[in-house]
Length: 120
Image (cartoon, rainbow, N blue to C red; front, side):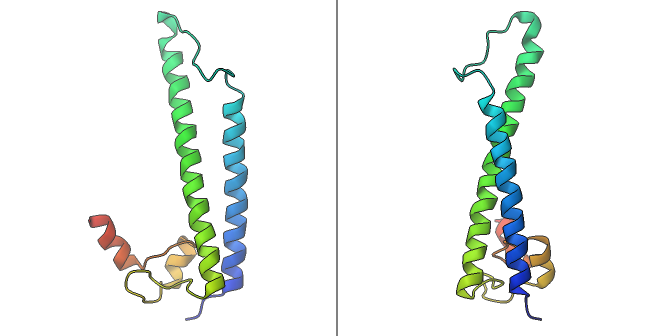
């Protein structure tokens, strides 16, 4: 089965656009925090609030890092489309099933090699 590269490119570009907007929103939210970058001094009664603020910041940082990683993977997938290697497993060289590319359009591994890699 052949891969509709134009459709995949469009899907990747749309995903890239959504992730960039999300990452920009996370950066904007963080810039609204105290300009010093320091957490405010909390009293003993506000310890739960402090934990919540810390958790929210860590979650935002994790989401932003994840978005940046996926953006790098999308850029690499777009490059593979251009150079003709999109849809080929980078380990075994076999075609990545279209169903896998439908689920993860920036995938570089077939299902079998991905499972082997995750098992270590």
